[in-house]
Image 1: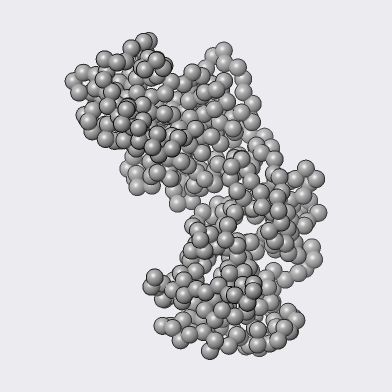
Image 2: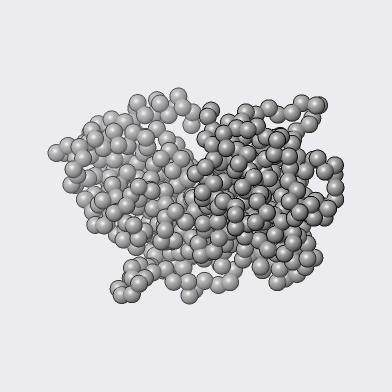
Length: 529
């Protein structure tokens, strides 16, 4: 629906004369509301009447103005607001001919559904919520009773928007409320994610949540006793959604893609890059572009280790980290890692572009912005619980750009690379960016990433390739020189603010003398543009 059509629809339906509505049977009631089937303008609708409301029809109409303007295939359509009596508002909305998801899960005499059906519904639920969250609209009451089915039970739409979370404790919503409940509503997106996880458990198990009264984990439970091995990825998603810390919960966008990974076959597209341990392809899951890395491993134990590492790394949710959606085996038993697609290529290609002798020009402020984003992403990885993530291979070829080259994202985590190279005893890392302790003792720590960060910092500020002055020495020779104190020429960078001082500190030979990423962030110059 185009913007002009939306505008016309909004003008026609934002104020409805209740006399134009032909009320039919009551469909149900909840806290302070009753819902009736009705006919309006020759179509079947639902009218939701507020029997008690501290909001007038005019206020409610204003509250629903966003909903009246939007149109999405997985969000219930709203037609307007009317006043019944005593200025209590009535909402006009789309009628779901197949009922609610609650009826489908728990209703009697309902045709059974498959796990694939359940995942298809939850994929659509995630897409609807992703759309709402993009408009800064948060639901605060996701549960099967508020999810509706259409088109012979094939299509799901998110409904019952606009409830104020403060009244939810009086509804049948407690099992779906996160630990923060109605006391902390500052992060509506992560509130909805928790509820989504509880619904995902319910639609898979076809059971209702059980309340545990005592103990540290008192509250509504979603046990996994009925989950078979093939449902392990879904169990992991549910556990991520139900993390007690809202910061650690995934986004709706990543949830949608992860579910799509479980129900959609992966078709590998064009090759975007390749290396010693894998090939990266462009692909698509439903309507979501993604990148797929095919990893060169044949050993079953290594495949399981990679799957475990990807599962942990997929918990990383940060604007400057490429999101990992999961892994799976291809039809020919190859390990595939599915991740976020970055549309502007690598930082290396941008900095060192040499097509037709024309290089990309960028300002010092842009360079500092990239470096700050890299520092923020690394600081997040190093602070992850229960164990920090050490990248092990920070270099410009593993830093991707999006949003018209403005946003930098860290990719190609070294822990996965480590698993892929165990059998060949290869180094994890790249000689020009590798910390001296890593090449000497195979010893990695957060400070190894700090060293690599310093090399990238120098590279972006100087616009030159690391160790260019050594005239293409082999990697082993470069590593030897690095252990003896060799570094790229610091004079190639501008003496801008404290840039040189920070770079020199990052590539100090002694790891203990390097500043941690958290403190580096405080000292980095701000981008001025």
